[in-house]
Image 1 (tube, rainbow, N blue to C red):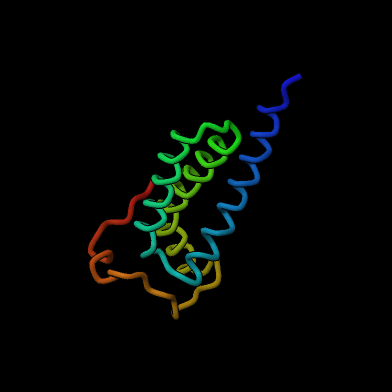
Image 2: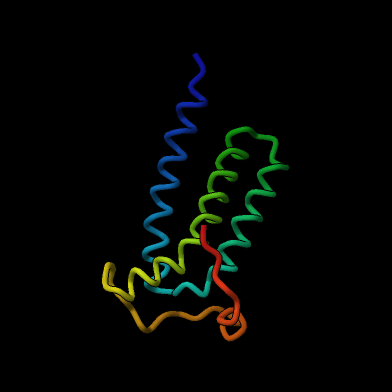
Length: 110
């Protein structure tokens, strides 16, 4: 029997579950303006996964990178949810470098 698919599925489920948590907490403490950095890290991890020869590490890097890529598009929507009261709102967020420039960009969404 080959348990690779089963184990990868469970690992993917765990990584996606953590994605929900970090989006909620990340937006609360840092804000949605960090989305370009999160998106860049996700793309970087996906590209790195293409060059890793170990199957497990490559698969997990790809899944984690895709989760970060999805999460970067979800940060703005989470900010809206916090503003309307669905989640706790924190107005003292840690701003990213180049925040004035990033504010002018339209945040991505799926």
